Length: 572
Ligand SMILES: [Zn+2]
Image (cartoon, rainbow, N blue to C red; front, top):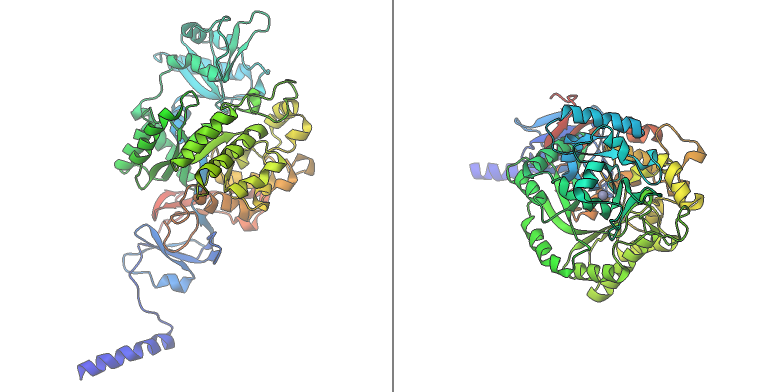
């Protein structure tokens, strides 16, 4: 009897559910977010109202009724109040490892001009009398003559201790006489390969600015931060990044011979790494293939869930402001000079061929159009030698790209990693790029939409600490408008045809960044099965003018289903 009744009930269950609108219960979720406008970046279903999260992953993405099934007695439910949510942001090229310097050394990024910098250095020296040396960063090339800032400004306030201050792009160092003396750099010292010692034109004395490899001449006076300092810097970085909605970052250049990778491993091992990190290991142009066995070994060591090093980083050239970017046509202010490649074309092709053969993802800094072309040529020859594979090599910065090379990114499967924060007619454009490159080239800087039109993948990045804050909302706004905040006149737009849409910019900071890091099955969109990485904003980017995108604030960041940052708005 009981048996028949039970069986009968089971047969009736589907009819019962269909009649009442109820559906069978499922295992309750840890967290349900409801009443939101979730832009999922998932092509099949770009919008949703609610999600359920269990064990750090989305288990449901869809409508209110569907998510309600996942609410059990212990489920935390957050009402988003109709606010916009996006996948957690991915910054595809940044330098979190240098955070110690950013947070705990002198920061000149707010200073304008020599006197302002001098005041800041004097104040720092006064408050740090015990420091054996003074190190910092953040001055701008646009505030000084072409030869860079002079040592006298520093000598007047710090005569007795060495001082070295990196420019905001990291490619030049401003030093005092004490540093030059201790390092033995005199007027007789030759420029090192790949570097320039700026000099007084009359006496030939070093004038106080060291470009690129010339900075290595004083490096021994300024020992690198130790393991504990690196970890302290990384923890400060991740608080800042999570508050900006960043849940995955690519650390673009780690030195395998230092304690940098150890700092990440120890943070992950002790549960203190609170975002996902993919990283590139630096390849030294002064060394040959003999360095690759150590890199292969290092790659195997860094295989945690959160921290992995699968890419190899090379520098193809320098920067325009140092006249060290490698150009197809000469600089306008230095007729006869096209800048210098850091790797000769054949050496670059050989190294890329070998790295590709060892299944490395190759990540190259390329600013000038000649540098970009030699990288694409090197990838072409690597593909010819090793065969086609899903390599996802990365070229980053891409300030000048010849029109003939744009479509080669898509055909070679190379990801363009751009810094949309820089897509403006700012002081660099006016004071350096126009005079150094000429108006025509300066007006065709930083392509973006062209890569997309030709079928390429573009991932966005801040290059933090070159760009501070590393707020993706600012990057999204600048990518859409290509103007500085508050300036939208047609003459103030940098290369209008290269503007991207809001959807394209969001994709570049989410799913395309995931692709660039081999993470598209893990994160980059709000989809069932993926890691619950998500950011909630106070403004709906789709319903405000593009010029106001950067005024939106992050209210909450979820990483692997945990609230990793909260502004305090969501109390429940
Ligand atoms: Zn960088």
